[in-house]
Length: 158
Picture (cartoon, rainbow, N blue to C red):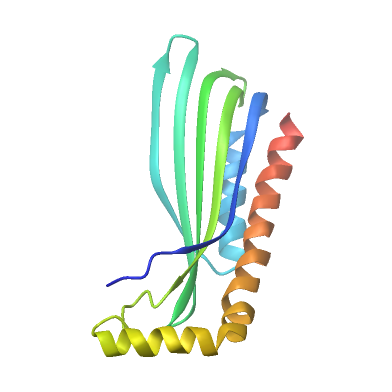
């Protein structure tokens, strides 16, 4: 039995008629993630034409293992619509969904039997302070750094 991720940051950014330099923002996110020690994956990229412009969806996933017990996961989803390309920028509307999560026991070492699950739950209760300092606080700090970068880059073009 795998443990579901525990969300510690869940935010979104709404963009209205923003001027967006997509390539620069995406390269910046990738560089920021790599600087913080995250593995970076592009999960999905799709585009299509609509009546009032182009629609694009980009989904990114990054993760960093803290130790064999826990890891930080960051998911970023860009949903743009009514995009029009002007020179090297896009003008349009969109929403950026941002989630930072912690996943405990992601290698499923504690979920093999009921007794192991009992020990796992006891360990989490007894060592709550350790979970906060080892997993949650770094997740909040690093998640906010990446979220802040995205928000600053989008505001620069708004």
